[in-house]
Length: 60
Length: 136
Image (cartoon, rainbow over the protein chains, first blue to last red):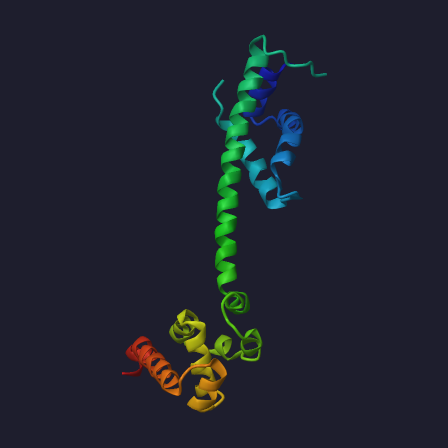
């Protein structure tokens, strides 16, 4: 399965596809959640929600 | 399972687009989050009277021994006391709470006793003005 199919399935709320996508982008979220050398869990949650909304809103 | 993305082909291009879209959204959200956090911290700090006074009060011991300001129930009086200069506040508290005389305070601060009397008087006037609405 390539990325396009995965994204389309994720947009249709397929749990497996969403899991795959979030696993792919988890390192990015973790990297951005580090503020002044400390991991900010609240920020991580916010970014996670942002990512879920991005999956929903992106136009293919 | 995943092959390296070389930017060719519809799927790879879509992936790059999604990554860019996500990156921008995440950075915006992060800036927003940090701003609101700083704002929150600002409000939280301004309620900590010890931190607030630390910067400009010449006698930190004095304020530590005086939880009085924190216990004041009148918010307007609290704010007025916080806004006064440290010297005036010192004079006011020394006179009103400890009952010391003008001359004693004047010696301690190295100023004339008339100046102390004037500063105290002005302080009282200002407090009256601030609190006037309630006492009338």
